Image (cartoon, rainbow, N blue to C red; front, top):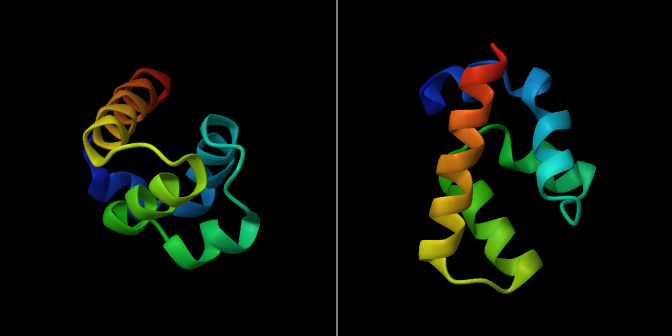
Length: 69
């Protein structure tokens, strides 16, 4: 599954994102609106982790979503 699929179905994936990164608020998720770069930035801010680690986590998230759908 590529990120375009997640972005196109963002409302369906918001719950999974919230489950993975619980510090993100509903307002954060609404503003992110499926944009990968914005998600990465919000994760960095909320968790105080490096960009490389965020990218790794998002990549793993994408792989798990593929397995579910």
